[in-house]
Amino acid sequence: MKHAEGPLLTIDVGEREARTEDVDDVLESFVGGRGVGTKLAHDRVPFDADPLGPENSLFLTTGPLQHSQMSFTGRTSCTGLSPLTGGLLSSNAGGFLSRNVTAAGYGAVEITGASDGLLAVHVTDGGVEFEEVPELEGATVSETGEAMADRHGLGDDQLVVAGPAGENRVRFASIMTTESRAFGRGGLGAVLGAKGVKCVSFDGDAEREVEIDPVSVEVHREAATDHDNPMKEAGTTSVTEYANHVGALPTRYFSELEFEGAADIGGDAVADKKYQKGTCSQCAFACKLPTRDEETGLETEGPEYETVMAFGSNAGVDDVVSVMKSNDLCDELGMDTISCGDVVSAYLAANDEFGNSELIHDLVEKIAHREGVGDLLAEGVARAHDELGVEDWTVKGLEFAAHDGRHLNGQGLAFATSNRGADHMYAEFYSKEYPLVGKDEAVDPDGLDGKPLLVARKENHNAVLDSGIVCKFSRDFVTDERLAKLLDADYETLQEVGARVVELERHFNNQRGFDRADDTLPYDLPDFESALSEYYEVRGWNDDGTVPEVRISGGEGAASADD
Image 1: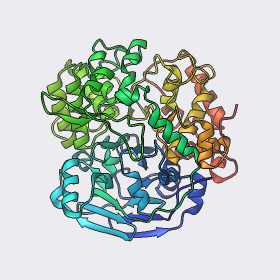
Image 2: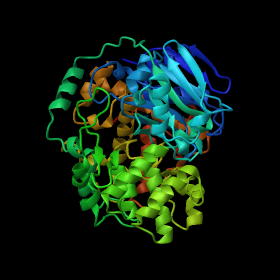
Image 3: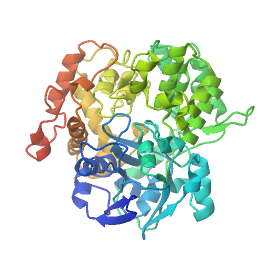
Image 4: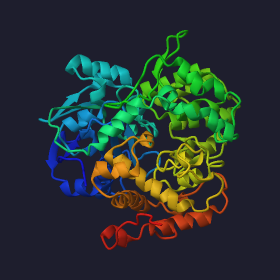
């Protein structure tokens, strides 16, 4: 089985020391990316660690496919204990960082401890340097990039950055790279900020040889020549009007499922603002969205569909330029647009202010700096909803993405079972229920019959993609058969790898008190409890949502969710 190569580099920013150690057994068993990050975090981070304390670690990882020239491989993974959910969580980001991380020559990079002064950490194939940067306190993401370019000639594609939100421990702060690309979900930017790290850079020329099957060339060619895919013009916003039509677009803080202004913020509206093509490293699919509003001069990248929901329909906003500005503020300040938009929408619901763009942008700034009511909202919906007097629209403390489970019932189940919380990409089950896939893979969105097995297998599949690492928008190009060739393993073996990753996440979270009571939803689905029990049975877990210890101690292997 193909896997990432190189030692683990551990950087203790408190002691300002770095060391390497061999982790070949982990790389060989877990491929790379999320799999390796999860295994290392499970074994090295104390189960009772404070997410914002020095004992928590962040693991930055790439995979074997970052050694290829294939489309859909411009991604990097980050794993750590989330200050938003309190559980183990991985997030990955696109852009142009991944091959710079790979070129530094390490199989994984661990950042641990906590510095007593603000640092820039420079990782190269020759070692690690620590630079004190007190003057960058409060700097935005672009200001930090400019400073590193001026001082060291570093590009934005060589950096991961904590914006002001991360420094201020906003619980949904993101880690930013390539200026506008985010390790978005779960607040890992707050972990970096709590460690006193403003940015980490990667540079080197130590890339190792990993031979990748020639099918990678076919994938790349098809990505380049597929001219009819709507994502090439409007990115993920291409689904907006359809989601609205079928009643799956969260609106006015989840009180409605259709938005009368969807066309004004959806695919065509965003495409009208797009002024050039945008992509990630080596990717010919080019589905990114550099946008510009000529009247105001505002330029940003995006918004993507989830941001259109969070700062558009869910906030009662039908002005695409307003959504673009919200997106740009979050990128500059370093915050997850989904969580930020949802908590802002909760405030709007509590104060009958839906559609107030000026207030929205003011709240985004206040959240990042924890000023006034922003200090409450920076805690996220789960911690703020009582004081606001609104319903808690989260799972495991993570705010909801779009693709509403009240219409897409299997996606609803997937929100509940996800170890990450209410995240749409953990199982990405919505793709089967709209559907965005072929008839042979599509399922009826109504009901949960037969879906627990399918959800488990999709979770396993996505864990492998996140370990490879392969973008999930490759679904039309990287088939199961091709994925097996790329990673040099039969597909069912890969399912077992994915199941082990999911199981390690679940086991870690169990040790922190998570169980069946956390696999819940703020709305009813037909036969939900029986489907949840069936899901646990498929995985070989206890009916209380916990993993039997024998499975972790080596007595049994993780269930791969076979038929």
